[in-house]
Length: 475
Image: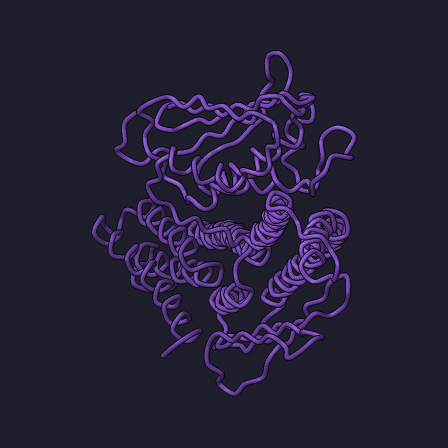
């Protein structure tokens, strides 16, 4: 036997057993102890009302009245009453029992309602948090369906969320018994978003259950709408950022790519004209070598621009994944300087590398690109004939590099902005895309390091880079 029948039998048993126990206690005390027996019956009524509710409490009051009359009121072992005073006392006892049962049952009902509302509030908050979180919507709706089925005692609960772009999302918890269902719409500010389909179990869906389901439906609809609005806002921000990036890339292609391409084309055209044009004087070895050097230099410059743009795309998509290994700093600097041999012109590059530096724990390709961007940036702003200095020293389990130039310097208020994409210090007319330092910062952070700008005594800019040393390595 399940459901309400079983609960009814339990409550009936409590209503009978309480007075029966009080009768046994009273008889054990003695049939002449009427007052003690009455107190035992009152205690039994209180216990039954507290456990079973109003109806079992009233039944227990009536049974206690009958037991007190039969066993403890003269004439005993009959339901007749010898004295009118005893009759009045029995009537007062019955009235007190009924009133006490009602009060206790009312308190019990209010306590149960408060506990149920607290449970509903906690559950509703948990479901709303899941719906508004970054988790999977299917999982959140599955939790909602399961919670409704358990909370309302349903045989089956179904959550259906409409999708104007495709098939509706349907999540089901429980097994259908083929009975009638109650439909509660998921109504939000934009209209109906779907519905809750509730199939009752052994008890019907009453007004209280429908109220709870309606609250869940409203909150679920609001959470879904907020989730959709946040998704739309993210898409709008992404579209704006994509357009900004597209315009910046077009600007870079139209200006910064055109210059090296024009230089490469001019060098190759001069070489081909000297070789193929009739009557043209052959180029001297030095002249041809200079043209080839120019083409190579501009090709390398173009290669770095393309690398920065590609890295920017990878940064946007979160696809930066360093392949870290033990890297000797001297070897890394040597490789970087070899790739930048044509970028410094007549600027001097001096080194201040402390001896015995520990190896780095970094991706050599990515950090090589960082150093290349920073050094090329320093050459861009350093006046002709000036010095660029590269210093390196150990610092608390890491290695710090400082690239010092003698350019115009960067105001303190702009030292963070120079790491923003497409930002150019000064008047913004300097050559370059404004990507070098932005990409450098992303790559350094991906390798567990840090990068920042410092003031330079005597004028200029110092770019400081802190990189992690290999584990177990000592300076």
